[in-house]
Image (cartoon, rainbow over all chains, first blue to last red; front, side, top):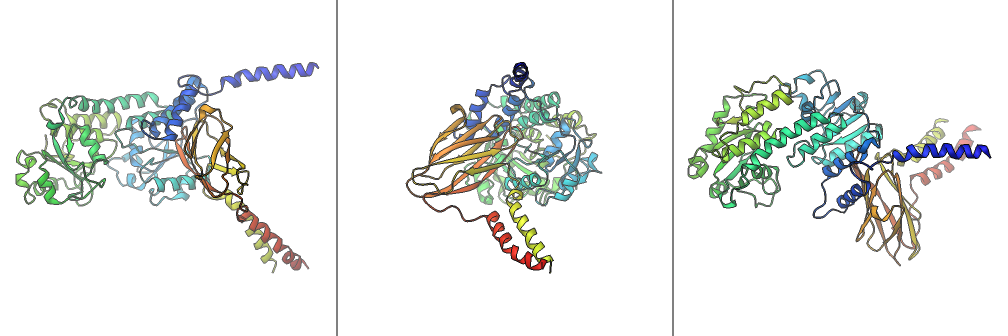
Length: 384
Length: 158
């Protein structure tokens, strides 16, 4: 009988710490988190974003140390350059990153520290054998870009080694980039670095936002943004429009049906934009940027753009507001620099004190820890 | 000659293992029956291993009705034929659906592990009211192969 009592006492003693291990009784309550999950799963208007739920999950799971967080990954493979760049902003480099994608490997000017790092192919042609041979404890893939392809990679990795953690981040969308940064900080135990960098990023965007909020819709600068394919632009659902709007502008081709339509040359003339921005750095316009390829061609590209047939009557051309913007500072994590340029070009009086080049240099010096001197490099043209 | 029965046995073993090896899915669905009687209840069990903060959305065939689940009511949301489950540490969820008088269809599902930032789909499960159970899968075929191989093996041993 005494043995039964002893057993009961032991069970009770074990039960108390077990109860303390139940997650979620701290920063984010179980009920609150469950409600958020259900709202996300049900979808519809007002539903939280996936990134929002993932961040809440991190809070929920780590509330008062209720559940020991997974130890930071020590050997990671990164399949997207945007995440690789963001990790560098958190101080995570080759000592943890054991494999990178081939496109990042092809940018030694921007990723010089990865010269000897193993290349694992790309999301379109992943080298599974090499990935597995690196014995990673985590692999990073895109969250929404090329989703089906990344789903397949994730499934194959899980089949080959279920212990490999797969994390999905885009790390280039302004609407959730700061969330991505903070989540990466949580994963790698670099919360302080993440918070500092997220504050820098959101601070830059907030400067632009607060400087344009009071502009009436009818007075907003109209913008035609063309990428490296001539007459290829973005409509309402595109990332281009999102960035134009963040800079306080109005996209002249917002109403087109396709996300990234190719427009008729006459339509551009008819739209008569206040500002024209052409992205360079890809296609037939591989000039400037970190690679600093053919910088002498940049003025030629600009002259050809402004001199297109019929463009002499466009307001942007008449007022010399035709600009080239390198995609290195627009399409990826550095989008905040491109947005700052867009705002300054659109509202030079309002943003007379805004110095996007200085913002760029600060990013490279303080967060990317690169010894890149921007003077003499072509990221925009003409100079503001 | 001995290689033939050995090869057959190997093929059988592989075909038995195939469902487990395929896809690398993290969420699995099992049903009490794939051919319920009209108006009968079907118990569905979902497993999502290693998930501490996740969710599953199940889409039921049009004429099937959700009845109840093993989770508290505040962790389940039903909207038309979609049933959402919030998983906070549970690795399995059991729920019950009632079959219609006739008809059938597939249960489809999607899962999220918010803590691990992963997601995927749950392989569809076919339900046919009053029908026969689903066609034999690879496991059943393997057993048939194995039975067929026995005489061959015996013959080779002679």
